Image 1 (cartoon, helix red, strand yellow):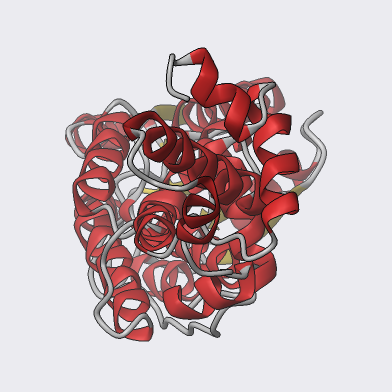
Image 2: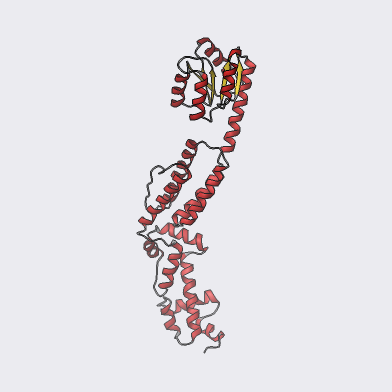
Length: 339
């Protein structure tokens, strides 16, 4: 839907121009009128039009002053000046204020339709240039989610810097950019909360532009860090280190998840995603690798090694070791020349 505001102090001209615009071949056009520049600015503040048609000679605030203020406050709204021959000098001055089209009175249907078509095409092209694709948005969202959840500050800075470079190639109005970034922030918080670990709430962006967005993302990371009671290490690496320190114990996935302050279901998925192995398989593999080292030393009894790597049931240890190496513990020692 495109909105066009018609500004003229003469009612008949306003209605005639409004009717010509509505007869345009472009569907989805709505029109509104204003009697002068003051009235026009009031209506623009309450509801921005996509295109402005204005006369030059009007009481209270003429078209020249209106165009000047439009350039200062709403420079992205294209303007069409409608005026008589005697106002050509004024029209030229309006052009310096960014006026896109100039129509002489009496206006013709072809002239009005041509101006509308040209300006709407320009708006469509501008929107295309300023459009952020869904795939690009999702790509940033996925990377930010990983960086924030794992408290990778440098990664956050890198992604936001990349976003800033991207936006500099686009001509996106500040208000629209802020709305888009606010929407991305909301999606990011929802993405984090999908893990169902601990609820996180975050308000609106703390500032404008990508700088304000980065501040808000860092605030989200600080909230996560606080929820984890200051633990800043990457969860899977911390889990690996904890497993390594406790190979002799019968650690459960739930126990390690609780130590990390994570939901057990999410931790299980995260561990598999980051290592390509299940928690149980990884823990068992590390136990067997330690068992191989101890068996290679030759100074430990096999039963002692079984206990050292967390197996009180010696037959179970033997079975598991053979599954991983193809040898029983005794056969493995013999293969190394140790009897």
